[in-house]
Length: 145
Image (tube, rainbow, N blue to C red):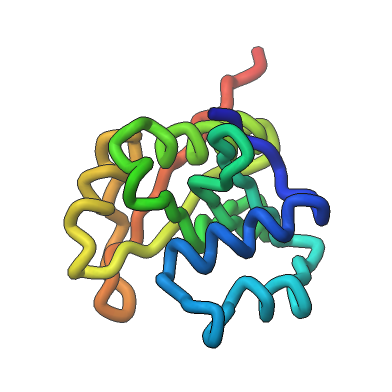
């Protein structure tokens, strides 16, 4: 398994991942829609996890004002509990920790497993917003003497 930043050449594999993740059939092919309409603005970044030739996980982030918002983290059911979600988060944190002050995300009140997952990797609760827990990972910068 390896994690990489999304490139246009990954779009077809990412579209297949989305179809599998959400159970779309050929007649409701989100992947096809995604291929035809996919775009990221300058503040959005997508990282994907591959197992062999298959996209098995993805993390979608937005960066603004020294804060990285994790908008989505998805892993295919058959690949859960293998460390893929954790690896995706760690890749993002390691990549941006020098330029970001904190990482934020929202976890729905009904997603108890997700909240436990984020607690295990260092996120803390930071309030409630729109029936979701706001969770934060603060980046402590080394003080320069």
